[in-house]
Image 1 (tube, helix red, strand yellow):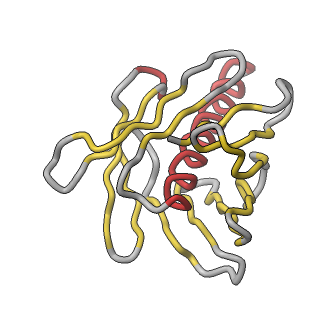
Image 2 (cartoon, helix red, strand yellow):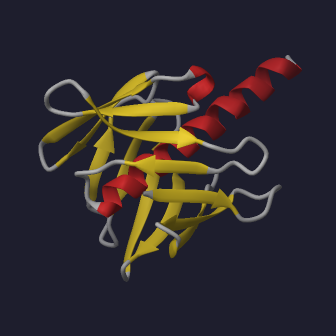
Amino acid sequence: MLHAKRIHLPSQEYELTEDGRALATFSLRRGSIGARFTLHGADYAVRTHRFSGVYELLDADGTAVATTDRVRRSWNMTCSGRAIPFRQTAAAGREYTMTGDDGQPAGTIRRTGHVQSQTTADLPGLELVLQVFALVVTLLRRRRKRAAAAVRSTS
């Protein structure tokens, strides 16, 4: 099970652990690169397409490893020709459920903390890098929704 915890409250830096063992740190950045992380010696970047709501996981060479369609209440992650569906199952994006090939829930990404912004991902059957990608996508989606709400409230 993956666990992401914000390192410093005002920042967007997170520490990623798997079953209590440190894996990586990443920062949610503004602009075209949503996050960068190193996993088992390999560098990855999550690219955000600002207006379309699409995300891409890029390896060190800039090759797309996985992509999402527009991330909303339900969305798909595509990798190696396989589409993996996710859907929001709790209010305010607090939980997304991964659906298996049989249509049954196969895993979850759940926000477990409010102030500290802790998130856990239990996505069995997915490669570790794809689990990290899905978790980062949900964090970026949450940040995007908060920013949009802040803009609306000042208008």
